[in-house]
Image (cartoon, rainbow, N blue to C red):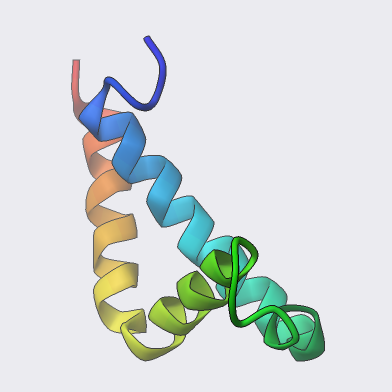
Length: 72
Protein backbone atom coordinates (compact mmCIF):
# COMPACT_ATOMS: atom_id res chain seq x y z
CA UNK A 1 0.00 0.00 0.00
CA UNK A 2 1.27 3.48 -0.74
CA UNK A 3 1.54 6.20 1.88
CA UNK A 4 -1.38 8.06 0.34
CA UNK A 5 -3.88 5.33 1.17
CA UNK A 6 -2.48 4.32 4.56
CA UNK A 7 -3.11 7.03 7.17
CA UNK A 8 -0.32 5.96 9.54
CA UNK A 9 2.23 6.00 6.71
CA UNK A 10 1.00 9.40 5.57
CA UNK A 11 1.48 10.81 9.09
CA UNK A 12 4.96 9.28 9.25
CA UNK A 13 5.94 10.88 5.95
CA UNK A 14 4.63 14.28 7.07
CA UNK A 15 6.49 14.09 10.40
CA UNK A 16 9.71 13.07 8.67
CA UNK A 17 9.31 15.93 6.18
CA UNK A 18 8.83 18.47 8.98
CA UNK A 19 11.81 17.16 10.96
CA UNK A 20 14.07 17.00 7.90
CA UNK A 21 13.21 20.53 6.74
CA UNK A 22 13.78 21.90 10.24
CA UNK A 23 17.18 20.19 10.45
CA UNK A 24 18.22 21.46 7.01
CA UNK A 25 17.17 25.00 7.90
CA UNK A 26 19.19 24.81 11.12
CA UNK A 27 22.31 23.84 9.15
CA UNK A 28 21.90 26.13 6.13
CA UNK A 29 19.16 28.74 6.57
CA UNK A 30 19.77 30.37 3.20
CA UNK A 31 18.85 27.19 1.35
CA UNK A 32 15.20 27.28 2.42
CA UNK A 33 14.77 31.02 3.02
CA UNK A 34 15.22 31.92 -0.64
CA UNK A 35 12.24 29.74 -1.64
CA UNK A 36 9.38 31.09 0.48
CA UNK A 37 6.79 30.99 -2.29
CA UNK A 38 5.82 28.52 -4.94
CA UNK A 39 6.19 24.75 -4.85
CA UNK A 40 9.50 24.83 -2.94
CA UNK A 41 7.83 27.06 -0.35
CA UNK A 42 6.29 23.89 1.11
CA UNK A 43 9.69 22.97 2.53
CA UNK A 44 10.10 26.43 4.08
CA UNK A 45 6.64 26.12 5.65
CA UNK A 46 7.48 22.68 7.04
CA UNK A 47 10.65 24.12 8.57
CA UNK A 48 8.64 26.91 10.20
CA UNK A 49 6.18 24.40 11.64
CA UNK A 50 9.08 22.39 13.04
CA UNK A 51 10.65 25.49 14.61
CA UNK A 52 7.54 27.01 16.13
CA UNK A 53 5.74 23.84 17.20
CA UNK A 54 8.80 21.80 18.16
CA UNK A 55 7.44 20.39 21.48
CA UNK A 56 4.30 19.17 19.70
CA UNK A 57 6.28 17.75 16.79
CA UNK A 58 8.61 15.97 19.23
CA UNK A 59 5.64 14.46 21.09
CA UNK A 60 4.12 13.32 17.81
CA UNK A 61 7.43 11.71 16.79
CA UNK A 62 7.61 9.83 20.11
CA UNK A 63 4.01 8.67 19.84
CA UNK A 64 4.55 7.61 16.24
CA UNK A 65 7.69 5.69 17.20
CA UNK A 66 5.84 3.74 19.90
CA UNK A 67 2.95 3.11 17.55
CA UNK A 68 5.22 1.75 14.84
CA UNK A 69 7.29 -0.33 17.26
CA UNK A 70 4.49 -1.86 19.28
CA UNK A 71 1.56 -2.14 16.87
CA UNK A 72 0.92 -5.52 15.29
